[in-house]
Picture 1 (cartoon, rainbow, N blue to C red):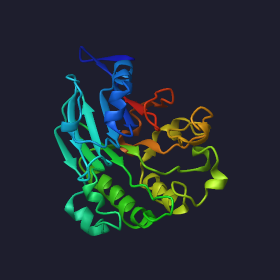
Picture 2: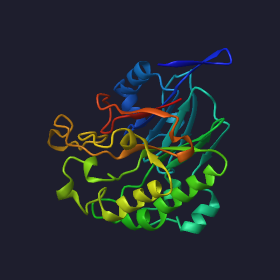
Picture 3: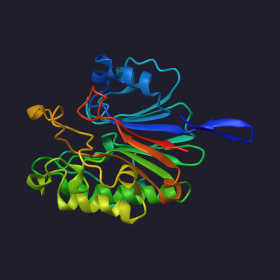
Picture 4: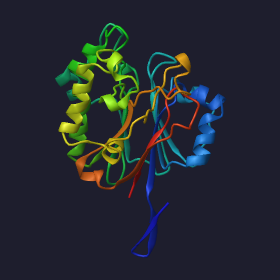
Length: 278
């Protein structure tokens, strides 16, 4: 890691990682999470789909401050943030004004505000926001929630946070933005994760000034995926989707370096994605 000398003190780039672990207890039982942390030593680690409350997790990481935001429903959804520097504050879920303005009040599956899906953590000069975006489902029965309510609410919330500090937004966003972001785009057009509606809402973030850090650094990189189905040996054949991201406010995007996808890290059907912050 490159270091710089500032006023006589050495400072190092911050390493920020995001990973949908598809169950933190499963990742721990496999030894995958421990091995990943030992190898990569993240300064900030954002997890999605933890599927557990803190009291259900046997984990000893004294170097980290931990914050879990779990779903009311046991063994479902959930997010967490681990950081070596303690956040000034954590905000779980959307503020009431955002929920009211965008009608994020629930659907036939229940209340998404009770699913532990979004955490904002405030640090000295930026916010880190991690999100586990609702899946629109194979029959698109949750696409309306995504298109009309959730994705709009997330963008408005990030813009609200930007009024105080730039935002680094990460997580499993459950959408491949462009055809380059999945192995088989044409047969998946209109299917969940690659509908015009979901792609339009992702584009809203970019139009608002957020930078897709990986694609900005690697505009033409193909076969760069973060999720693979369990079917048909898809991961070994790298037949995947890029649906996990780090987005950065324009005001902080120039500090982002080395955005990366860590497809070699096993333990989940997703792999970690990372950035370094100078």
